[in-house]
Amino acid sequence: MRSSIIVLPTTLSDDHQKVLKDVTEEKGLDMDKEYLRKMVKDHEEDVQEFTEASVKASDPAINAFATK
Image (cartoon, rainbow, N blue to C red):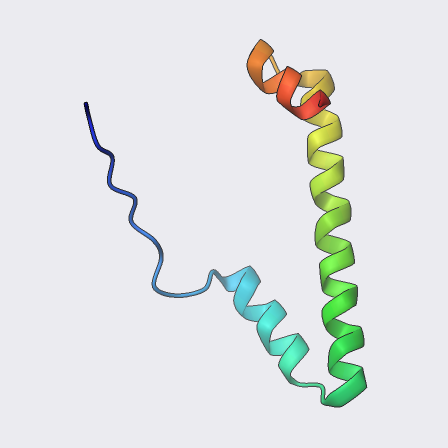
């Protein structure tokens, strides 16, 4: 059996660093609202990517996964 090593990043990407900065610049309820705005936007982008993959993916396994 072959084992794989996964190396996790030790820092945030520039995009994630910006999200963290944007959210933590706010306080209290405004921080919560900003966090929710960022998460909704991210999830909408994820749905769009899955929708595109379910139509455009050339690999049948990826297409089936994205469609499901």
